[in-house]
Image 1: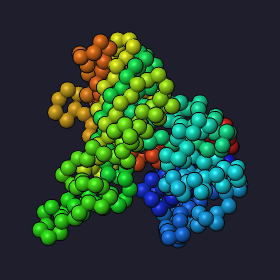
Image 2: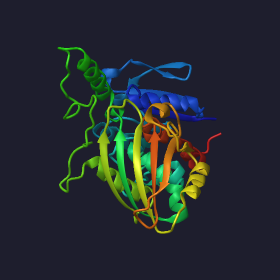
Image 3: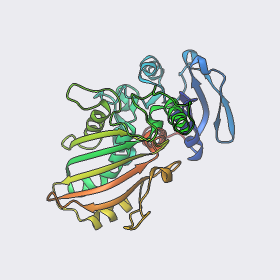
Image 4: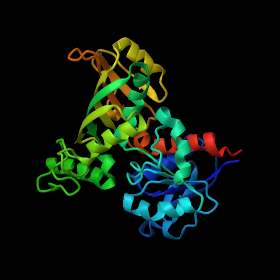
Length: 340
């Protein structure tokens, strides 16, 4: 016996990935609904070898549905998630709306699976920001061994994190550079993204950090440990899919790089590729379509007493969004609902 599952925002990048991953991982489904806004009504989407036609989110009745994976913006989530939750359907939300609500668990299953049990407060579970998700997967096993004091992270985030329009902008700007008269002015981003990097993701806050940077700080503390100090610089780069992070970690206790490498090799959700030779590391192009969070360039930081550096890469549409949501659904089913 399986679950009745709705995917909300099924025509978007993340919604389509949710459907793909549910099928790939053979998630136990009795009924599945692909929901979208009225402007996308009737659009066909794939679920394994099946083709689904999207239904209208506004008129959908969530009563009798076990889980709803939301992949829509915060405004729409604010309107529809409470309705689904009130109907008895557990909402797994990919937007930022509920991440910082103390009554809503923020979950990365490899890190804090037990937090799923807190869904009962509001019948809602939050999915973290894409850049946070992959980082805490890498930090968790190291934190368990040597206790992390401080993290300094610089991100190199792909344009897919901004949606299809951003991917189109990168593509069209790149073509325009080589075709005189077909230059494309920025619209999604404040500056040209093709052949450029932009140290600005989300809005600026009063203290000078961007909201994306603030999210990494707040979410790491909520998911992993409130005592960890985090500072982030988040940068958009001209890559279609796949986020990369350079992470500097300061520990309470000494942790040798070789031991760290061994710990990460045994940790769930992580693939270590760390050869000290040209190409002996993973780049965003190589991680696309994969479930793993890849870790490379593990090395001692000699400028502090107990420090390590590492390079972390993951498919942001998968582990950073859709995969993590499906893993939450799996965890919820295994720990709480247990059908079949």
